[in-house]
Image (tube, rainbow, N blue to C red):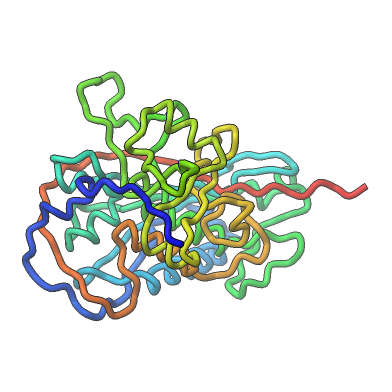
Length: 344
């Protein structure tokens, strides 16, 4: 039995697009490139590990680039990348964090905004120069005090050892966030404020927020964008949060995929990931789990398609002309690693 999900079509821009041409029936892949920000001798340029790190990161970029379908000739996405000491303890640490470099309001009559890379994809050209996303990775994992006894594994063969953390799967996860797999909800139930102190600006939500919903317990769902801030944060900490896109519904066996909504809000983890318990081995769950594959799963790709991406398969489409307003933001979405408790 199918259950309904309440959608606000006015937020999608469907009614206001101007059809100008048919998109290619065959989608080529997208070139996704790295822009390394580390200084000489450190991070991706480390004398010992730099080459391995670059090879692994670019391997992950190619996986995403081959999975996504281009909407225009020469479509290229640039991701800023660097290693920094993100801290941690002997048993817990943030492995990486990432986000879009900016957002665009493609239809200024609605509060819906799109991450830079996705906005370019939707309009069919580069809206501005520069990178579309950024990602940082925890260099402390290669040390001796963070995640004691563990270290990064930079191989591309998905064969990390028992005491190694697979870097490629972590990079794939963070690249997903840079491409728009992340919402703007904050700990008070409001969406990210691009102009703090200016109460005249409308509350903006993004392409991810549009599909997050609450199970009402009666076979229906309500989008969080239609709720008050208090209702949103209550839903986001209820363990009762779901993704309402049609593509993901079908990919998940005709069921809305459950999102990560622990009882205590976790900035950077809550809301913007698939539920850890239900989808532990999914790429876009919040915690790294050994055994995560080097691939974009059907469910993750379906969620990306819901947001406006194309997969690298033949399918019809259209190009559109939109009114554009650019806004810039740096958002961190984090993946953590928790080591198992010692057996006694």
